Image 1 (cartoon, rainbow, N blue to C red):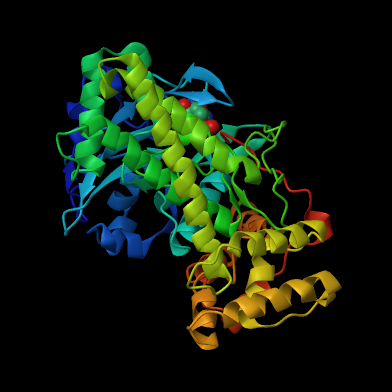
Image 2: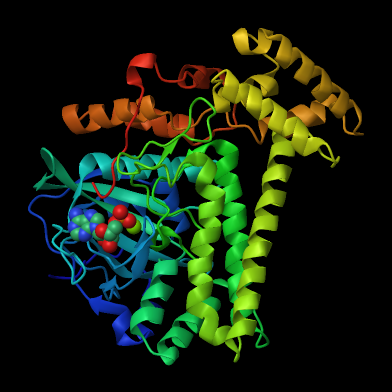
Length: 487
Ligand code: AMP
Ligand code: MG
């Protein structure tokens, strides 16, 4: 494997490789026969200090394909464990390789990871590869999340590899270049706790603090780490609930300590409001249903807290008490973030004790009438209350209460509407629209549909006329929609 000649701006550091060796294995990507760039995220490339034109050249594409290493890269696969649907397992990057950490012109640090880059020490019988459809799906949805203002890993590029991958059918292979604040997961700590020494665990905790929470001082350092992670998860999961995002596989290996959304396998957005909504084909008992996400967040955080117990206090009882208090903090913070977010969705600036009841009443009506989550809030935002849901007597009664509540704050009606427009997206990645784009790209090699979808999703709060066509919920024939893991 040779190095690229024309550097588009790669500027790597490899701090993860300074962790104790059991945290990773050195692993080069496996070359592929005939790489072809399918999509490049030019604005993200620029933010990273990379020149899109050079990235599009054959040397640039060879990097995204894993056929050439960029200068300064020290590729490795990360070791981690995780609770999958409640069961503890050894995992690790089974089909991904971390090239290194790109240091951007302003000095930020981002992991650059190839996903689908071949087998590693942790592949466990998998082929180490990925298919084009699911990688484009991750690209579309992660970028949509970014535009919605939700912390997320991002997607820099997708290349088709020219290889076939064998799933239920034969599919074109692809590699996604994923950009993340880091890939440290709850599962990384579970791995350290299960198979490492206390020194290994401490080294990982120190590394995580330095990388994500450098302001944490010496005192109660590991407790503060736990509290910071709890805070970010409370904010993240509240932001999911507020747009109807269902992650679908909230295993502890898919919970990034940075607070970014990670792993876009079986995720999807809810249409009709129903807390029991599940899209993932393997989530048969609804463990990761929309309405369960907040409490699963607490469960996952408890697994994280358990790994930290030896570092929290000398006496175990005291450590357990501290951990329990941190989970309670998470619950309170989630509730607070969620209610604040809901207030904003209803144009409310101040707080009243009955606000939660007002929100609950609206959600209950939406559930009873299977009203579309996004479009109901969108309609309130643009004051276009047409359709059977808004015609009902129950809704009129609720509407009256809401109007009275709006009248009890100082801010003008127009400020309220601005707040609502900036909080209630006009468009989300509707499952049927995403599928349409993927079918055109994968089956017909037509990328235009996807480009249009990406453009519409890049400004979800525009409420522009062009977006109207993308606000339609799926036709009845497109339901029930199913998503798949590890594809
Ligand atoms: P996920 O469901 O994507 O979170 O993946 C769970 C685990 O399976 C991770 O350790 C992945 O690296 C691994 N994995 C998923 N797909 C493959 C594959 N095709 N080959 C090898 N490992 C895989
Ligand atoms: Mg994963």
